[in-house]
Length: 312
Image 1 (tube, rainbow, N blue to C red):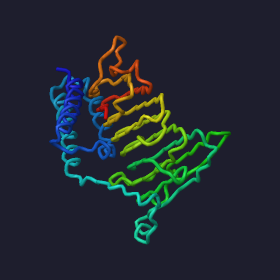
Image 2 (cartoon, rainbow, N blue to C red):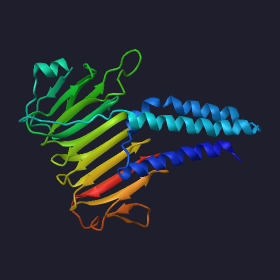
Image 3 (tube, rainbow, N blue to C red):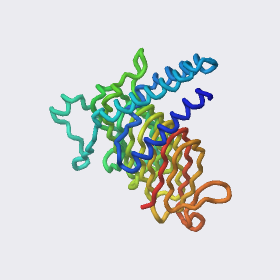
Image 4 (cartoon, one colour):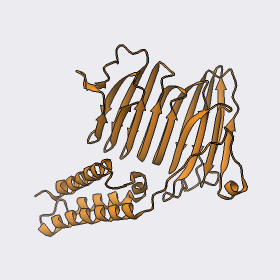
């Protein structure tokens, strides 16, 4: 009996069971919250290294026991952790700046729109946060952040008809300083006129991007343990969307009238592509991919993630 293989087999069975139960709505499990306990994986790996070469049956059973105890503890902690829900409200395209919001630690960032901006790049680098994007009509970029005590900064550069916005989490001497048990809220609006490229790089957290009313050329997402929801519209003819994740849930909505092709390199990840057919090259495509005037190309990479693409 190879205890090392059994141990990692238990880990994969655990992850698959959690994904299955969550997909059927039987549990509410947050991979983003679980990310703060990543040192437990180091403990598990250390125990495997110490006892994997032992011929003593007690050592092999110790590996299995530690694996079961760690996974059980993480499950109990996660399921009993109060889940944070968010209601995003935009009032008449204006930010509310009340005393109550200032007391909660709300911060505001904005850049004015210029009609010369044909292309806009938004680069987001953040810690444990809940990011929301929707369309805006007044400013090029607006953001309202809560519970992060000014830990973001906004920088703008421009060249000819292209503007680049860098919206980054500040670093202190100890690295990113976030309270992982309570995600900060980062609400953003982007102007409808430019053609956007959006890059998001985060460790743990959540992202809800409603880009259906924006002209979007590309969306690139990188995350460790996070939940991503992205809705793409049909206002740009050739969209590229890429997601590279560790242990995450990725949900993508695309228009029915757009042709779409999905390329995957997903290891043990779960995949659900409703309305897609597998092609000879191993990709997945909609029946109207060749004939559609608007096309979306999706590239998915993940170690142990849950990918879903749906049409609306």
